[in-house]
Structures are given as C-alpha cells and as structure tokens.
Image (cartoon, rainbow, N blue to C red):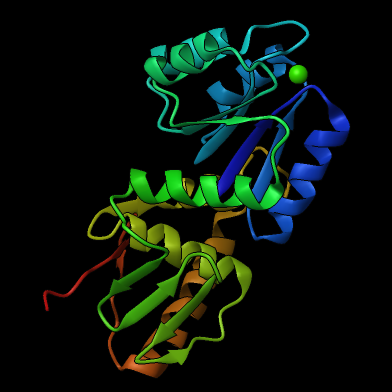
Length: 227
Ligand code: CA
C-alpha cells in the first residue's frame, strides 16, 4: 500500500511516515499544499492522509481537486480543527474518514486498514481466497494453513493482486502501488517479474496450483477459483 502524507508539521509527518513504514506501507510526504497537489496528479496513492491546515492551501481545496480529477485514493482527513463544519464538509465532499488531532498512530493504522477494506468490500482483516488466508493486520499469508515465507515486497504484490482479483493489473500499476513514486531511480519493471516469479513459486510449492496468470504484454491476474 502506498500512502501520501500531506502534513506541514514535519516532526508529525516524519513520525507518521516512520511508523507506517515499519508497518509495511510505502510512504511519500508533502509539507505544502502546492507539492501535494503536484504529487496527487503525478502519482497513484492508495490512501492520502490530508491535514486541512496547510500554510499555502486549504486542505478542503485539495480534496476538491482530487475529486475533480477523479482520484481513486481513499482520503483520511487529519485535522486539529474541531469544528463540526469542517468534518461534515470533508466527509460530504467524499473523504473516507476524519481523524481529529491528536491521534494515536495505532488508531491511524486501524483507520487506514478500515478504508482500504471498505474500498475493496472486505469485512474483516482476514481475506480468504482459493487456498490462501491473508491477515492484513499481521501481514501474513497462509496457504492450506501454512505460512508462506514471503518477503515484504512479495506480500505487498500478493495483496495488491488479490484485492484486484480476476482483473489484470499492469506492471506500472504494481510499480506505482508498491514503490510509490514511479520516477524513483530504482524503478525497473524486470524487478517486478522477479518478485512475481518468486511469489508464484512459493504459492505453487505449497498448493500445487498456479493462480497467478501472466497476461502477455499487459501484466498479471490473480484468478479466484469458485468454491
Ligand atoms: Ca497543519
């Protein structure tokens, strides 16, 4: 999961970033509204954490820009503004959640998981598909009850494919989702193929089945099997 933190208080932003990265998220930061506005248009984020009080921008205007641009990101407003007006305005405009400051990082994490689940129509933190059980909170994947020895990237790719099951996802989408900023120097799409190959092997070693289909020239698809 790829998260943009829009927050002008650098220590808070850094604290959130550090915590979420430990939890396995890939994070990007914007300390001004102008930078945030640019990043939102260039990159694709699963979740945007939006502080309303920015030095150069009203966060509500950023939210309006995102909605106008038909952004797919889930938005969680983080705000010290306690006015009910702001909260209602934000949620009415299409923000997914509103977390008043100060908040605990643990609560932020659970709100993030909740908006991601809602986006994908998942009820709890456990996702069951074919012979796999994925615990989104603990970040583990089991196949027939046995934990798969996945690396962090393999796990992230698996979850992304599973959340988009039966749909083709492109290498670019995977790259944006897992590595965030696609302009990063370490971007190389062969890299993704290596991760996919390892992931496929780890799953099929355990299950004997191969659900991960390569769609030539396009990307990959995780095929669900009717039970
Ligand atoms: Ca602020």
